[in-house]
Image (cartoon, rainbow, N blue to C red):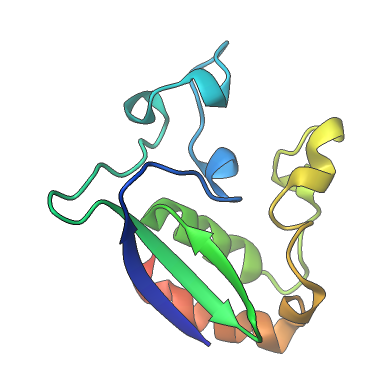
Length: 125
């Protein structure tokens, strides 16, 4: 299990982005500027690009676009009993699109999640 930091030239979203970075009331996430989201998405680092944290484990990976997303994942995965996506704010039609419902089953046992939380904790906001 390892976490790596890299940079991408173009702005992007991760599976966790829409659940952490919220748009203003009455706006769609897709139509909102990075700066208007709460909390705002990270800005470009001159000469490098946008930061990307990648956690790799058992041949699979999950990416994060901000320390706030990492903190959210640490909070959710650190719970002994995983919450349902609906408990985390997913509306009825979006339950299957939540990042937690898309997480591979090999990442869901408690001992594995403890390792994930330990690896991600230093990068959380």
